[in-house]
Image (cartoon, rainbow, N blue to C red; front, side):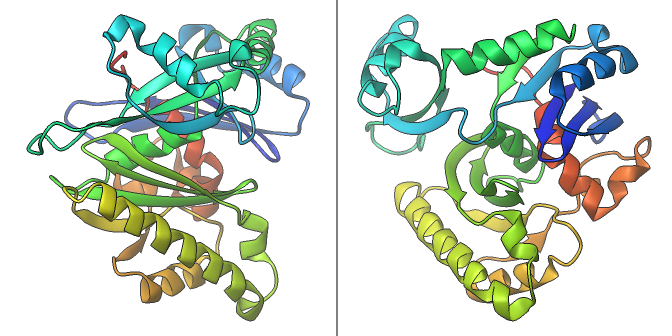
Length: 301
């Protein structure tokens, strides 16, 4: 079960993975408002949270995701070595940081070369506050994750055999571009165009924002091609957006070298018990929370 904080409330999604079928969304709940403590306490009772492994996501500004060269150290020394490398890269003191790492696999057929890793760092205070919020509400929190990994979880369901997938989503904080291959996150970029700018005015007013998004995508995908030339990209998926987003999809499709497809989550998730997710608005609201709920056992570095 995943709990996501969106601009206008709290989202909850319970997903069950099935070996020979689409992952099934067993239930979703939306609680409007921003009284998080009282909302969580009520929701914990309503959904019987004690019966589940629960995951939540940090928000933009609550963590940093950095690409660093992987240190040549034994696995048990990895996090200490990464902490040392991050000390001049964080915007706060490294002693105040909670740190985790994600591997970025290299080309198995290439000569041995330096490999990179993602390091995730958040202030201890942010982690402690989140843990306290859930503990006080009697919500048994197992994992604190980040949106990049939630988006990766959905992208992994879309990958054709042997090819990579790009995914672009938007919310109130802006755009998030990820590239995944073989179920792994290879690229993450934030695009500073919030959803509100994609909804204001007519198409003429939105064109400068479309141009900015297109330029950032071109730069990021060109960089990706140079760095990971062994990965062939399939297409760019545009995550569900509120109605009226077809113009952005058409603009990107006419200005990028790869196909651009609007994602319908019903092609990769079973919504038979949650018909409210069949609408584009519903899919947009629950997008990241569903991705977080798709989390399964990870390799520990």
